[in-house]
Amino acid sequence: MRLTDLPINTLKEVPSDAEAGSHQLMLRAGLIRQLASGLYTWLPLGMRVLNKVKKIIREEMNNAKALELTMPVVQPAELWVESGRWEEYGAELLRLQDRHNREYCLGPTHEEVITDIARHELKSYRQLPVNYYQIQTKFRDEIRPRFGVMRAREFVMKDAYSFHIDENSLLEGYHLMKEVYSNIFNRLQLTYRIVQADSGTIGGNKSEEFHVLAQSGEDAIAYSEKDGFAANIETIPLHPSNTKLAEPTEELKLVETPQVKTIKELCSFIKVKPEQCLKTLLVQGTDTPAVALILRGDHELNGVKAQNLKAVASPLRMLNTSEAKGATGVETGFLGPKDLKIPVYIDYSAAVVSDFVCGANINDHHYTGVNWKRDLPMPELADLRNAVAGDPSPSGNEPLSVAKGIEVGHIFQLGQKYSQAMKATVLDDEGKPRTMFMGCYGIGVTRVIAASIEQNHDEKGIIWPSAIAPYDVIIIPINMDKSYRIRETTEELYKKLQESGYETIMDDRSQRPGVKFADADLIGIPHRLVIAEKSLDQGQLEYKHRRSNETEMVPIKNIIKILKEKQL
Ligand code: ATP
Ligand code: MG
Image (cartoon, rainbow, N blue to C red):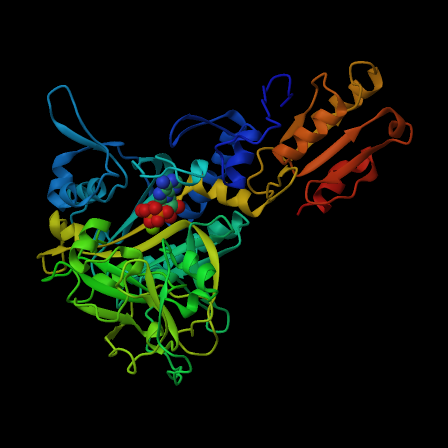
């Protein structure tokens, strides 16, 4: 492709509303443009990357005998009523009506539609197992679309659904998909981890997520190399601490703390570390207006764990400031466990802190030097928080480390949830109807591209892995307008590269070399070839790989051999 035929509109400035590095680079390199919040156009350069990702996914899915189909984006409400999700699904489901006032939604996922297909198309156990997949647009009215295509409202997903006669077959299908996903993410040259998405104790069927490790990730993953264990920090059950509660060393003191409401403000006011402070959170109770949950100041409440407590209303609801004041008579920033007259639960790790600081249940006051048993009775203990770095791994072999991850894939054993609700049966070997077992498997096709850029960029721009680069090679001729020799060599080289199967860009714009170099770095083409008058005398051109800082002079006649050797 000649750049005179491909209008690229690269941006020097970082767009002000783009937070994530990948979002900035996708806009600057001209891969995508925003139409409205969470809605993006894929421009020609971006489209090439998207197609390459789709091709890899298709090849691997087809290899595993999955069958491609495509389902409508617009789905009738009746199917969702049948599965129960018309009520259950929140505001992310965009609902609409047609001219006959019939209700529809834009598909955020396709379990209902595929189960409807399966119950009509599949008749006998002999036809199973079957895995149907599509690569298609999804719509989710995300509350906070951000990071560009990473969390968009309209995005492309590869979703697959498998149907089985029994649980064993489902397990086989699930493990096959896990392998297929690993192959796909390996071919996409991503550094990823397979993460347990639920622990079994918290509930739900088995599911695992594929996470690309990146600083900008929205999920926190706890892992232990020794155990080969990785799980979302929210899904790890934690046990009573082995640490012994130390003897008190301080006196209990009431301290005036005017306007000091957050743990951060408290720490700087009293000069104490967050782990020495205990925070008191109020949630709605099952039979009481309020239940207090006590955690260490540096720990995060885990909503699922909390709502599993009998005394806590499910779904979990934090009390607002006026409800909290109504239930306790104190402003929220000054709540604490001492003399609190509502049910109280304490997280295991908060129960082993001595000489702690907490709200005094008196406005504008905190206590310091508080000690369990000496100053107040120990409340009921519970596991209330997310795991943090340093918590023991499930085997106890090694402390957990925590890294940020971007969820690019999710595989799930659905069991009979949808097939039961929607009566998807086949006849078994005795001619009796049997409810099928299902698995579902998603890849965020557009998100994968943003995730890849998060892992592959520098201050100059994108560094595409060879598998998904929009082009393999970029030729930059210097002073092409003025020199016949440069023009002729460039054309010849361009032809030769294309004939050898290299997807090539020729930067034939009449731009300054500096502009061309900057654009080549920004759009991240792996191999850069510069043709200049001086080196032509020796029959050479300048070669540089996007990942390397070194340039080298190489003979033009050997270029194909050299490109093969330089494949990174
Ligand atoms: P998340 O937790 O990130 O919201 P999810 O668990 O809701 O994702 P799934 O229903 O498992 O997502 O969807 C399958 C895949 O689709 C995800 O693994 C992710 O890669 C992708 N995906 C989900 N939501 C979005 C979105 N808003 N924008 C882009 N990709 C998305
Ligand atoms: Mg998911």
